[in-house]
Image 1: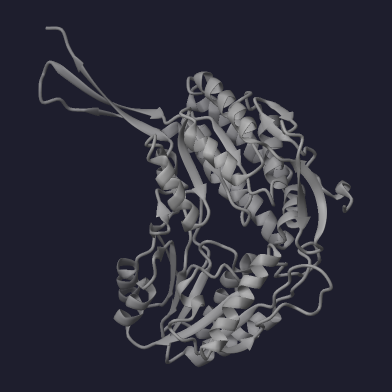
Image 2 (image 1 turned 90 degrees about the horizontal axis):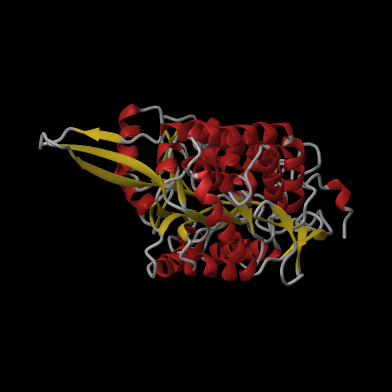
Length: 487
C-alpha cells in the first residue's frame, strides 16, 4: 500500500449518528490510485444493517432538524462552504489520488461544491408558501412547504464531491436529513466533506455516510419506509431499476442519468476558437462527464479547419499523473473504462472511421490507466460510439449542411441531458435552443453548470432538477391548508 500520510483526509470509517464507526462486518474496501494502480487506503465496507442504523439515526434527527429555522440550518451549510474552501488543496489532492483527474480540475470541483453549499444556505431561506385569495369569504387558503423526509443519496465516482453536494446541501437546507452512499472506489474526498460538516456544527444523525455494496445499500433505501426520497446520479440502466423499486412505496425520485451531448458548430463561428473550447470540454476528466460533448456536428464549410485545429489542440494535451505539474489529462478511472474505450474505437474503425490522433492506450506509462486523447472522423451512423454513451476521451467529428437536419440528428438518441451550440446568429441560437431535446443547452458556453441554474435532463437522461430553486423544491412537499373562520 502507498503511504497514507499523503492523504489529508483523516478518517476511514462510516459516519453514523454523529460518530465514525467501523463496519458491523469488520470488512474493508481497498481504494486504488488509477495513475499508479496502488492501494492508497482501506475504508470500512458497510452492510445493509449499517445502512439501516444510519436511516434510523436520520429519522430521529429529522424531528429536531426540521424544526430549526432555515437561518439556523444555513449557518451549518455556510460554515461548511467556508471550511471546504480553506481545505480545498487537501480535498483536491485526495480526489486526484483516488479518482485520477488533474489537480487543477479537482480543486475546481471542490470550490464549485463549496459554492453549492453556500447557495443553498441562502436558498433555504426562500422556501416560500402562499396565501391564496378565497372564493368563500368565510375561508382562508394557505400553501406551506414541508421537508420530504429522510433522503437516500447515491453518487458516482466521476465527480465524487460535486454530485453529493448537489444532494446534501438542498436536502439539509429544506429541513431533511440524509444518508449518503458514495462510490466505493472514491469515498475519501466525501469523507473529507463530512469532516467539514462536522466541524461546522452538524448535529448528530442529520447527515450520515455509508460506504459499501451499492446493491445492498440501495435495497435498504428502497425497502425502508423511513426513506421518503432517493436522489441518484449514475447510469440510465440503474435509474430504471430504481424507478421500478420506488413504485412499491411511491418514493419520490430525483434521477440524473446518462447523456450523449451533441456539440454543434455553425459556419459563422470561428472554427479554430471553437475547436479549443471543444477539446477543453471533451477531454475534461477524460470525457468521463455526464454532460461531456460526445457527438461533434460541424458545418461542412468549416469542418476541415475545425478538425485540423481540434487535432492540434488534442495533441498538445499533457497526459500523466494528475499530481504532476502541467498535466491536462489524467488516467481513466479504471481498466474496464479503458478497455471499453478501445472497443468503441475498434468498432468505429471497423465501420470505416479514421483515427486522426490517439486511438489507443498510451505506451509511455508502465502502470496506470492512461488513454490517448482521440479524434476521429468518417464515422458510420451505426458506430456504437454514436449510439451508446461513450464516457471516454473520444471526439467523433461529423459534418452537416442544414439546420433542421442537424437538429434531427442531434435529437436522434434516447438521451437528452445536455447540448452545445456555437453560433453568432441570434436566430440560429433561438431555433436550436427551442428545437434541441436537452435539459441543459450551452450556446457558446462549453461549461454551463452553476449552482443558481437548474441541472437535469429530458427523455432517458433523468427526471427532476438539481441546483437552483428547483433543486430545493425537490426536497419539499407542498401542503395546502384551508381554514374556515367563525362567523
